Length: 163
Image 1 (cartoon, rainbow, N blue to C red):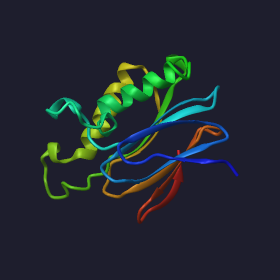
Image 2: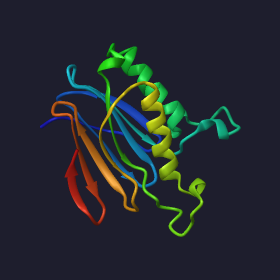
Image 3: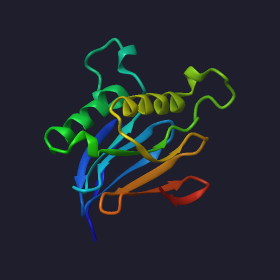
Image 4: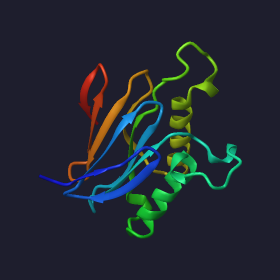
């Protein structure tokens, strides 16, 4: 059986096959997987908020925010891990509408803002999104297998799927 690398909230980790990587409890948080099919290396980020520039303190956890966490994970994959940026692909899951059920104010929908920021950054880096299970109003747990490049999604009250 392969080793399972666990990623906590406001964190990211890198793994390689035969390891698998997982994170629990994605509500409005977004799980972003960056992977390279040929090297079987991937990173998984569990991000809480879209943008660190709205927070005055410079002493916050960089991994809590999409703009800084994804940048750090991308830099590690393309730097330390030596993966060509052209080879990277992405899968995303989470970003549920958990706290703004009755509001039309999109700023209260943190999940939607996380999805928008992730897609913006991935587009700027020209990283294609090859699978997505986002939005709606239910939590998810995800596990990525860099060997098969499949993302297993357990959705509260819905069931399981693969993308």
